[in-house]
Amino acid sequence: MVDAETGEPLPYVSIYAEQGKCTLTNAEGDFKIKTIAGDSLTFSCIGYEKLKVKAEDLSPVIWLKPYTALLREVTIRPVNAKRILKNTIDNLKKDYDKQSKWTRKYFFRTLIEKQMGTYLAEAFIKAYSVVNIRSSAIIKGLESFDKESNKGKLNLLTLNIHRLVEVAPMTNESSFWMNAIKPLSNSSTLHKYYDVQSYLLHGEDGNTLCRIDFSWKKKRTPELMHKSGIAGTAYIDVETCRLLRFDGSCDNYFINESGHSYPISINFHIEYDYSQDAASVSKVSISGGNDFTHYRALLFALDKDEPQTTEMSAIGFDIVTAIQEAGYDASLWDEYDIVKRTKEEERVAFRR
Image: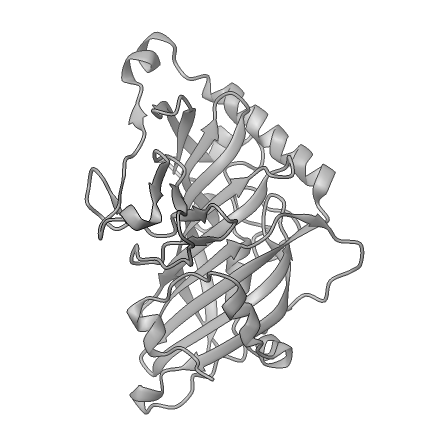
């Protein structure tokens, strides 16, 4: 799966089969999905034209066409970004107030690469899903390491990468992101931190999106120079002022390794759907690292939201122990079309 203009691979594109099966392209743009005779597949990515193709007509390379900018319309009728942002933020807050206790089932995968080896974890999890991921609980999982390196298993028993997938341009009930400056947290203080640019994107399907770029003020105060925060790009439905996608990067974040604190880069992509009339996270992908560690992680919704009537037992700080305690159930991996592993992920994949 590639971008029709740049030819670059498109990771994490949603793929739907007619009988209800769904999956994503992986980090390299590859995918696999089970089909039956006569099936058609729909390829969908926010900001790109949808594509529907019969399974038997699939070509080795599939091209997705990006939306085009409405330059003339922007000149005649400028985007009222202030109004759109205020309404979008208000809608996110209303969604959280209305359905904060709704949960969703997800597939989670992370690959950690260090000088001492490579680590892979996969799990089916349940999490509160509206506005941002939080309170993740393991259903079943597996974990593995690079046996070919002969360097031993990585010491990752304090791995909290599942907290990274709680990232969003607005977050609730996430201590990890609580103090970060976020572009969709408060419309009244937005321009204190960000320079904002906006324009319209139009699709051949008739949909129009407002793309809004949030970049840090060129003259940042000493306070902001050392404060953690998120910048990036939002894609918002113009008619409903509902957030559909956000691509972001995070500044001034650190991880602890061997008793020392190191800066780490965090880049992420998050998408929402509104199947239950609220902003529910449909997928999150993150990547980053530093001189010692490189990682990527993926969270992909498998089912629709449902109300949670009892308290969930969240993972806490240590996802490795939580996976080991939950155990492995091969039937889940067989039941769902999990995202195809990349060659590196397959190389270190746990096998039974």
